[in-house]
Image (cartoon, rainbow, N blue to C red; front, side, top):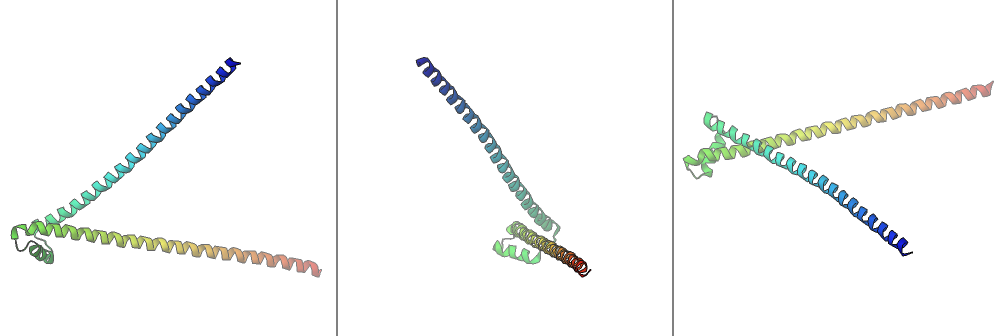
Length: 161
């Protein structure tokens, strides 16, 4: 009797050990999946930061080319001198800062305009689709009414005979 009890206890221990191993394996898989997800998200975020920095650098490059070529925004050129309190040696650097910021704002405004235009197009397409669905439903309802009318006419003709 005690050997049966001992066998049962041994079986319970084996099941417990199996459950622990199974749980550990599941936790390991979850941890691996989670860490992979976090890594991908951080990689995406890093790419976004690098992309933004690259774009920002392009605005400064444009501003520098304007200074080199002499093709300046005259109002901004004057503002740059005021911002550096008349220090001509700092004027070019201040102009490039102001111009890069201005270019960023212009680009952001253009993106916003494009976004609004896209949203308007999407809304127009949704409305067109809704109208087409309503027209189709009206046609189906009209067809159903015609079929019902034909059925009634058929019944009336049968009745009249």
